[in-house]
Amino acid sequence: ADGFVSVLAADSVDRLPDENVAEAARRISGVNVLNDQGEGRFVSVRGIDPNLNTTTVNGVRLPSPEADARQVPLDVIDSDVLSSIVIAKSLTPDMPGDSIGGNIEIETLSGLDQDDRLLQFRVRGIYADIVEEYGYRGSLTFADNFMDGRLGVAFSVSDQSRDFGSDNVEVD
Image (cartoon, rainbow, N blue to C red; front, side):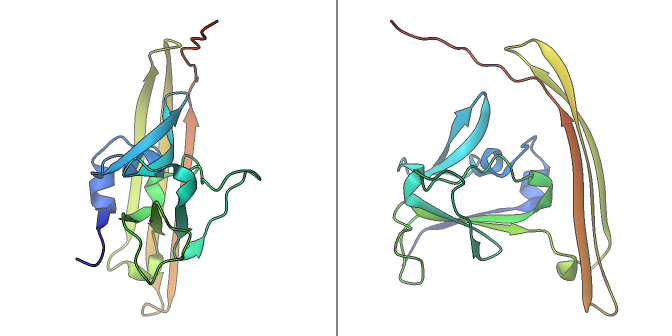
């Protein structure tokens, strides 16, 4: 094969309690996720530093919000808006030259791709072991196309209440 690519489709993500793109990506073999306060944040492909990955959303390159790093935090993209996650694990000629670690392509839900109207409502309970607190997560997702497929609409709204905590163990 010219390259190794893994795809995680939205119907696979729907079956699991993943809250964001990083959490969903950890289900792919050869991918691990670096956690921040118990939640997946940065994606590492084949154990390579996340700074060596490139990340795109619907074909548009995402820059890092940090001035001194290239890694993109994927904990801010909700898993309910996913159509698929495509992770290229090897560099191919059609990819940007700085995709040394791999490329993470995030495809979001589109109203133009819908054959039927999509309406999802989800409510989940959350329990945080470290802080011993309960929380919730709720989301509403809608997608449909109109005017014989010439106009597509898709949106997702979510709300979450959850306490974070971490085992802060420091060595003197």
